[in-house]
Amino acid sequence: MAQVWLRLDTDFYHDPKVERLEAVTNGQGVFRWIKLCCIAHEGYGQIDTNDAAMLAHAERHTGLKGRRFSEFVDACAACGLFDPEQWGKGVITSNRMLLEGSRRLSSEQQKAEAGRRSAEARKRKKEDSGK
Image 1 (tube, one colour):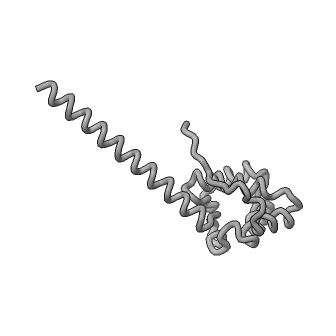
Image 2: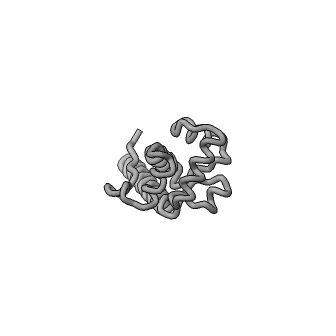
């Protein structure tokens, strides 16, 4: 499986939003927030917790279940790390996460299209050489 990189500023821990999360979670929340960002990146910028499989995946990787998971995401949203309006709909995301997700999707679609065109060209070349 190919690696997919998550863009994270090297000084992210100085961001006031991250510092607030660290304060309200007694230093335990930042790593969980990063894990949720990684899972969201896999989902092209979002985690739809209305999908039972996605919710279970996110809960498993944060080590939080049910009410504790929701309270943690509430804290992230209150700190400005996730979009509170989208979280109200059960979707964990942010504007930046959606932007990165759409860039990744666009890149993957371009690569797939290039691969399709290359395969078609090889097929035509093979057919032409057989004539």
